[in-house]
Length: 272
Image (cartoon, rainbow, N blue to C red; front, side):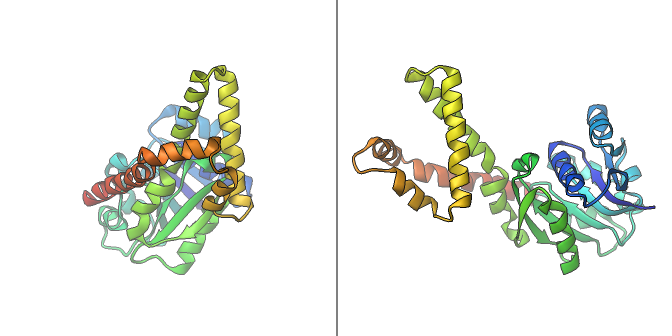
């Protein structure tokens, strides 16, 4: 029996995807194989997920129906070596590497085949089953390929469609996005301590506030602007904080930061 899914690079994001796939009963562990150079990651996949794991990517991809490329961008060239020689031309290739174009993957897989490639950008909340993923078709991917990718990711994330030229923006907003929120919560905790709270108190207050606010954004159907307005009484404490942020240029700083992330994605893409 062929492997339904070969995971090339068994890092945290790959783990989240595989956990979602198994948890949703899309595939059983015996239909999945993973490849990673790290013995520790192979051991985790084998012991915790009951998924076979090997050291070499070609050994995993040889009989795969779907090959998930989940290596870091700087390791993609090495990961692609030999894959095209062993994979079937019927294999669907899905890449979650930032800054690596489908054209680059097509070129390095070789054999002058029209490889069917879908590029995707997930984010780390997939680890808790609450991620978001954008998927974009390469030149030869079919609607059926996109639907197969959608099923793969939807076990642990909401999936949206995008064009490949939008993926750098997706990376800036949602791929890197969790780090922005973690950074904000870090500063809220720090401020709480400076204001006299214990680290434990400040951490509980800040993290639970962030969690509750996120639920309001996703469950009430109201815009962030309207939700913010409801908390901000004229001349009140929230108004004082927001006014200070505005005066310090925080809105533009945030926009410029996301543009910097998108630009870095473009720089990575220019080398691929």
